[in-house]
Image 1: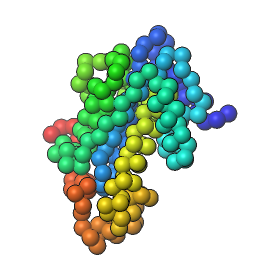
Image 2: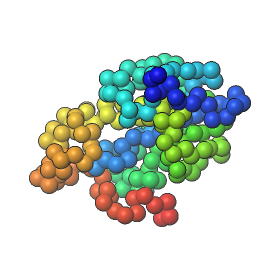
Image 3: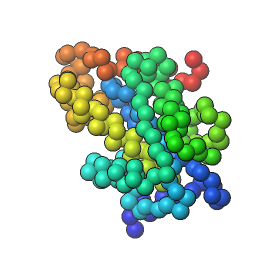
Image 4: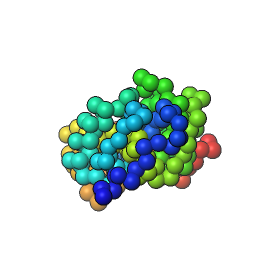
Length: 204
């Protein structure tokens, strides 16, 4: 059995319009944090969709097209490094997910969020689910859209700053990336607040 076949199609037993949300790039040194929201038709199933971290880049890119084709509605959003520095990465991730929900062409009745922290801007019921991207189909699909969108963006930005090796590390703190920061300094795409302890706080 393919691992993705274990994913649940629905949180609610009723025919609720459920939206899955996830983000990509929270732990990066450079680039935006991206988020996606996905609503599938109620009876939709796909045994290939899984947590983006469990898929190859080739598989993610193939599934991206399928998700965009089959979704009842989807949206992908970005929050810039400058805004991350202003609001912290946790706030920025939640903000990006709210932006994605707000851009959906269909209003969800329930938001399913990967992780354990969220605040809703739209007065829509939500559920936080730890490892939700490995549990629910719509969250896994959102993880794929967010990841592929961000990876594509970082490959484009790598043309401006090839010495940071973003084509391969996508802005994460890989050895070549850290070495380039130490040698060349920060670019306009770097998050200057990455090291701050309050980056995971909702209290300021």
